[in-house]
Amino acid sequence: MIRNNFLSGIRAQLPILLGVAPFGMIYGVLARNAGLPPEVAQAMSSIVFAGSSQFIGTTLFKEAAPFVVIVLTTFVVNLRHALYSASLAPYVESLSLRWKILIAYLLTDEAYAVGIVRYRESPSPQRGEGLGVRGDSNHFYYLGGAIALWTTWQITTAIGVFFGAQIPAQWGLDFALPITFIAIVIPALIDRPSALAAVVAAVVALAAYDLNYKLGLIIAAVSGIVAGLIAESLSTSSKNIEQVE
Image (cartoon, rainbow, N blue to C red; front, side):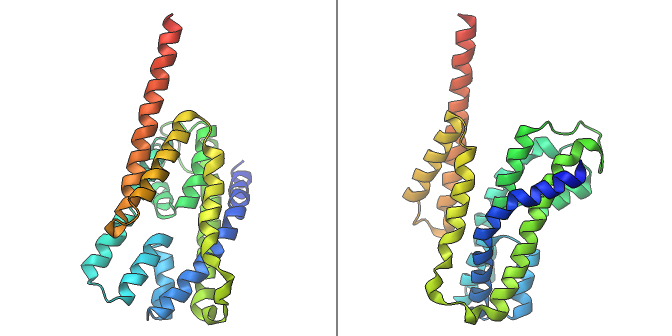
């Protein structure tokens, strides 16, 4: 069961890796062009492991921005991971500390998108169940997909760092990741609240695109969540009224 779920997680992540791989190479190229030593550029992918933060941090480094500005900007951009963590919390609360640390480290947009679908489809393990029991096989599914993503990011970063000059600019690789993530999100819009949340978040993101420090992303995420919660609450209330009648 555990092995099958681990391999299933890898297979679920494979289509997404087609979009992630070009971005890993692009980051490697940008990091070298920004003046980062190869070992530092690679270390960012291993330690930070957050594509958007790495891109922004590298750009600010190239512009000689103050260290405090770089840290605060990347912190704001990564605030969305707090939302991901809150969503995953009910499914991992019974796990050991080492599991939680591993899941937190590997948490990215793509890992969350694939993992949360699996968690929602299957019951979470009961409180007190530990590592290796049948109940936490869903976490091995998440682990399989997340490790496949992490490995791909490290390899493609290295390709960009050491061979980036050989990648033709006309390839236009920067479109791949947004298109891939859209393909992940759309199948997850299974009801009106989730669809409304996506629409509101998209509209707000476009309206707030020019805000400094990518604050528009955070505002859009919060707006989408609030819209979804309100829609879910109204839907639940409507169903309760119908049952009473």
